[in-house]
Image (tube, rainbow, N blue to C red; front, side, top):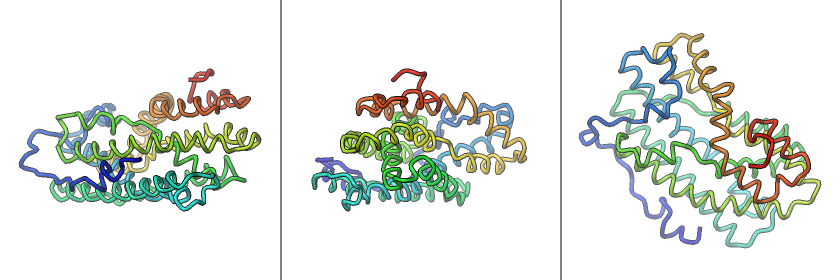
Length: 306
């Protein structure tokens, strides 16, 4: 984060504006990144309904960014920045956490801004999804896995979120079929998140170093559930979007189950959390007796350290 003042989007970026006249023939979100578009119950929908589904899938990304960055990530960033994390850190690390805090607020701002712009142009309403169920699910997971260490659980969830690598951030910036304002917004986000990834990887190594052995054991056993909890897709917006496209409740539920449950969900989770697992390995988490078995039991690895 040393060059944050020169490189961060909130310091150097410009407002990304959607120009309808320049975007003919481009899509708002790539169909290949919308898992349910290939489902048999969705394939036969009229083209306009399918287009609306892709727009709302973009809204999912933008709205989840606005809510999770401010309500989850910044909660942990504030603990670090204000010296309330329980981890001894030099002033530079605390200042870096404040930089993360500023970045995440800016990501929330421009995500909602872009959603509103696209809603005005496409006439596809921006849904009122507040991700409260998902945020509550994260709180429940933290309370269940580390009941005696609530602050530590919050920090670990933030570390997980900030070290995940998703296809959206990786692929969309380079996809010329996507409208320019979306590509540029995602690129801005990805550049900041690359710095955050490095920061929180280093923070986790320092956190792990300062934990005593009993707490390391608890964390080693808790992390698999925390990681999986962070990656369990909030399917209510998906179900809502499918209903708005014309599917009845039972069909929408079946599509969600087929596309996000079972093996499909496990494969997606393992792909997204690979970098987080490498961080755990390099820090020494897998040296905790029984930790590898816990990660395997949660479907994150195949039974040996990644």
